[in-house]
Amino acid sequence: MANTNQTTAVQRSHLRVRMLCEGAIMVALAQILSFIKLMELPNGGSLTPAMFPILLFAVRWGLKDGLLAGFVFGLLQLIFDGAYAWGWQSMLLDYLLAFTPLGLAGLFKGKSWGIFPGTILGCAARFVVHFISGITIYRILVPTEVLGTVFDDPTLYSIVYNGSYMLPNTILALVIAGLLYVPLKKFYVGADIPKA
Image 1 (tube, rainbow, N blue to C red):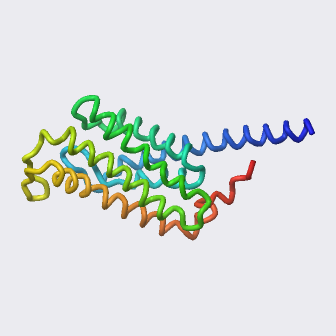
Image 2 (image 1 turned 180 degrees about the vertical axis):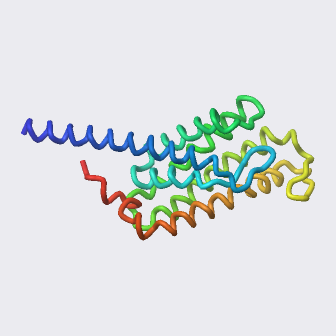
Image 3 (image 1 turned 180 degrees about the horizontal axis):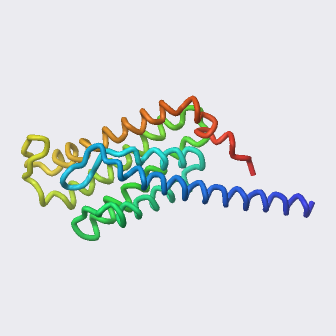
């Protein structure tokens, strides 16, 4: 009996180390991919393939670990991406809190097609945080011109501005997930992760 408990504890420990190593690799990959900017807006926000590794990690390992990976990625973005921010509130919302909800994809852990609703949920939650930042912090920019239109309303400005990069980011992450679905299906559902 004691031998079985020790074996189970060792297996859990190995699984935890594996999760931490995989998380570190996925966060590092996301950080590297964040430097591939397909589009960049003047007040922060860009189109990159960076969210996909965090979403994949969350779907594989679950909510708690996914949220942690999203938070760490947000912290790295704050440090290394130039941190376009208007004070500590903006740093908190647009970086630390905005990337953390990507981990909500972990709610679909083990689901066959979980990467797709997980991507939509994680990206939608990130958009909500940026939207809140836009109507509370960046309202000082209103009236302003975005995409050739002048906005007087902070709510509409925040929807259009943040939507102009979050919607393409969501679509890009879904396209990547779709292109990699067949070769990575067992990884999407965590079939390679032993049950502890």
